[in-house]
Amino acid sequence: MYEFYVKDSGIGISEDMQDEIFNRFTQTNETISELYGGIGLGLSISKAFVELLGGKIWLKSKVGKGSKLLFYLA
Image (cartoon, rainbow, N blue to C red):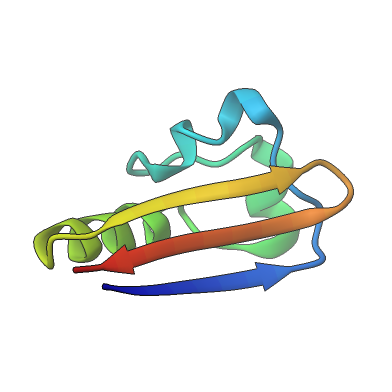
């Protein structure tokens, strides 16, 4: 099994939105897309690929502290 992660020191994601961001066209709020662009597909595509390869993907994040996206492949 291999585990990978991507970490940033960005704006973070509130706990109540952490499961939602893996859904298609979902962003934490409308201001995010105006400031940073994107349409909310990247993480849903990533989740589909990881699960297709028999893995799991999840997120650890704190607002104002950044995020850590983790996934493993079996």
